[in-house]
Image (cartoon, rainbow, N blue to C red; front, side, top):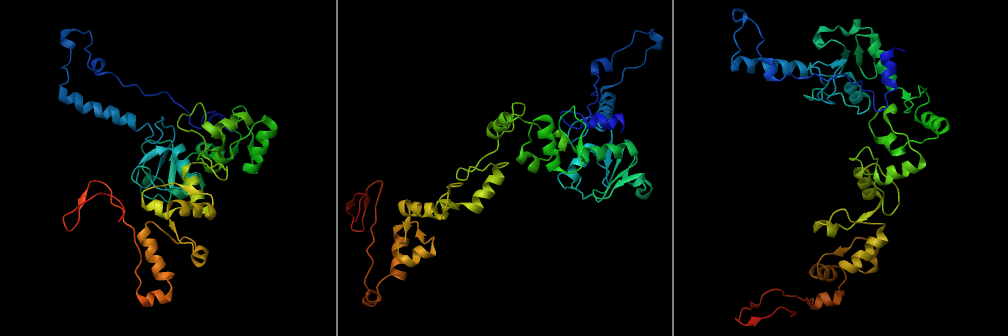
Amino acid sequence: MSENARQQQTHAGGAKRKGKKNTFVPLSQFNAKPNVAPHQQMATPSPTQQEQKQPEVESETEDKVCFICAEEITCYAVGQCNHRVCHLCSLRLRALYKNRACAYCKTELPSVVHTRSSTKQFGDFTLSTLPACDKRLSIYFDDLEIHEDALILLRFNCPDPNCDVACSGGWPELKNHVRKTHGMVMCELCTKYKKLFTHEHNLYTPATLARHNREGDPDDPSFRGHPSCGFCRELFYGQDELFEHCRQHHEQCFLCQRNGIRNQYYQNYAELENHFRNDHYLCRHPQCLEKKFVVFATDIDFKAHEMEEHRDPSAKRRGEQIQLNFTYAGFPSRDFEGNDRRGGRR
């Protein structure tokens, strides 16, 4: 194993090898006049010439920094669109996110080349002659050391920075190793959903895992714990997974949804039916109770349903009318005869 590969495998916070950042020279220093004889002094560049030179310096620096992770690039990944990212972000996109589109222009990239060259275009490579290839990810390598680094990242490496074990048996073997060798555990939800290489995951004691699930990690303020279902007490990776669970296994009132009340769930239909009885107009005829969801938002709709579905046939023949109750609220109004009428039942 190369020294470069070992550094990537044992990096505690991730596989990224941090290089020394490029420093920008202030314009005051860039334009400073040296102490030379008058006949040796050169003309000071004009402001226009200074503005023309500055973007070249910035462009050269930007080419060395990955626009995804903002880290200095040591190995480049280039596809047919010739936009460059670091090989780690390329590997993460293709292996973990199952995404083969260019992160910059969204062009689908059937194949990419990982190379140390910062100038070669994708068309400059003959893929069939390159020394190594990952056929599953369709990544070609022009350097065997880069290929070895990629293979190490894709293994089930122990997250402990002082442990070089890689488990060939996948997640079950790795979790068993972590538990028996280090006395630690890994978060089941994070290992299932979080898009990280295995060595980038955190290790927890039972106490810190409970805190992780409940309120998050102290070193990651963006994560506030895994949400749980209030009915099942089951934990979920995020709000999207919790929403999908509630939508499939619990009940929502469609009448409340129409009124703009969102994300209000009931454990089962029996609880939802109690809500219908208390807050809406539920038809309590046995055949409608058996059908379920025969409920109305207003008394008028409910009475219309009763007259249509449950009225005595003899009453229909006699043309009996249904009794409706109206309530007027707000300022006094006038009827058609011009009399004042206060709010109230009629």
